Length: 112
Image 1 (cartoon, one colour):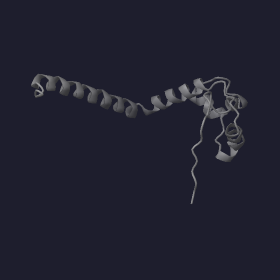
Image 2 (cartoon, helix red, strand yellow):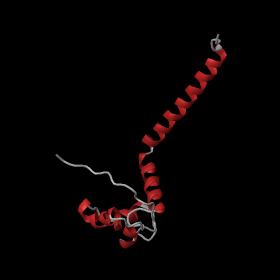
Image 3 (tube, rainbow, N blue to C red):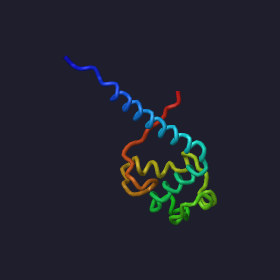
Image 4 (cartoon, rainbow, N blue to C red):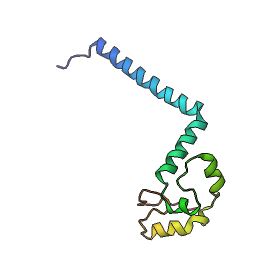
């Protein structure tokens, strides 16, 4: 017959769970307290990963990753503005049109 778990093992497990929860809460606190810094880092990461993308090169970003340059150089666009690039990808273009990683599927939304 199986033995009941020892109380000491449960206490260690509870401490581990408490520590994991504490770490997760600290992460949430960090990303919600330092939103501006988190957004800056995320944008820099996206831009550095995609520095060689055709679309960013066409607008003259030239590998720069800072927010101010991005805001100054890159236009606000609509879906229709980038539809030719999307169509190229949908038609099988594997080059770095909008993203450095290959885009293998599109999610679409249909309005009823």
